[in-house]
Amino acid sequence: MEQYKQEFIEFMVDSQALKFGEFTLKSGRKSPFFMNAGAYVTGAQLKKLGGYYAKAIHDNYGDDFDVLFGPAYKGIPLSVAATIAYSELYGKEIRYCSNRKEAKDHGDAGILLGSSLKDGDRVVIIEDVTTSGKSIEETVPILKAQADVEIKGLMVSLNRMEKGQDGVLSALDEIQERYGFAARAIVTMGEVIEHLYNRPYKGQVYIDDGRKAEFDRYYEVYGAK
Image (cartoon, rainbow, N blue to C red; front, side, top):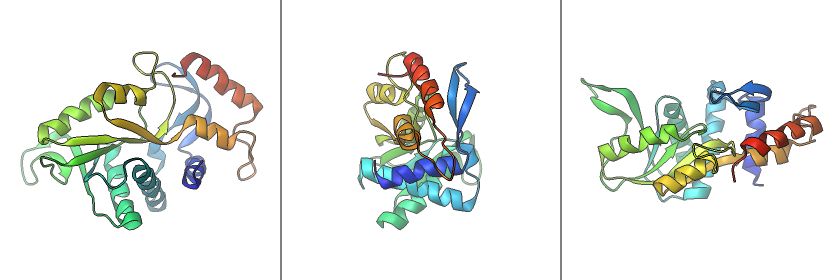
């Protein structure tokens, strides 16, 4: 596993963005972990987060894109932080773009924040985590309505590796199958388990044998192919 992925897993734990225990999800599932990207609130955290996204985007999409699009609302700071980090790490100026929930009719009018979109733009969508793919159903029409853009792919922070809407594939695999563009994550939950299982981190074992058994039971029921 790449060094930045290991560091990102530890960063999620340090920031309390990734927690372990028993959590009832919006879907009603009882999950042994919970991911909350809203836990990244400080300047230092956002700078690090942008760097991890930039590295993963570069690994998966190279420099073959022009715009990072972050859907409102959580995608807005992600797109800004990652755009800054990409410039610093790779010396390429890409543009950030996000949408408003409601179009503005004065001043900087329209539905977009940041850069406008033009025909031929190559876009990478950036989000926190995708569990159902519903946000992409909303995002793709917004992008296509603004210009004749090419969506290169999606980048999220964590692939939960759970069944999506069709009950077979993961949400990311469903997106790739449905829309024809790549859907990737900085890390998968499998990589998180691999890195933390029976390995002390700052004096604590976050995934011991008991918790590993909880993950195994969870993925027997909800795990994607």
